[in-house]
Length: 148
Image 1 (cartoon, rainbow, N blue to C red):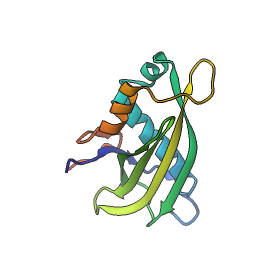
Image 2 (cartoon, rainbow, N blue to C red; image 1 turned 120 degrees about the horizontal axis):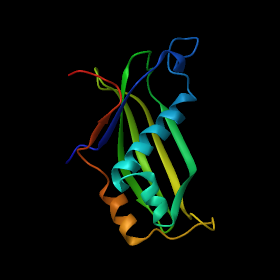
Image 3 (cartoon, rainbow, N blue to C red; image 1 turned 90 degrees about the horizontal axis):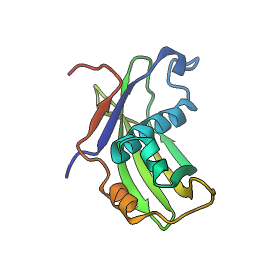
């Protein structure tokens, strides 16, 4: 089985709370950053999605915390496609600490496809459906500056 798409980021000092761990609300930011890189990988860039007359909006985000992440940790967001419906699709994301491969948090996020001009739900075009189903296995993008 191929490895899932992976986006790596480094925890910054300002993202940590008084206990010295990543503040819980920051994980929503991490999901957004990772998914933006995933979408860029699938479609070239976000504008290409808009050029097809569609946009995406979050309709559900579930996060499950497993273990703390700390300042300077490198987190790997591993993204896999989930359910693809008529107008919506889901992604599963597992955040793993890079050095120890320790699971930190999981998230499931659901987007609805909307008409970029008129607003409102629109069916997922077949070409976009295929790209979403295929995902981006074996792709690693890092903003963390980690070394092997």
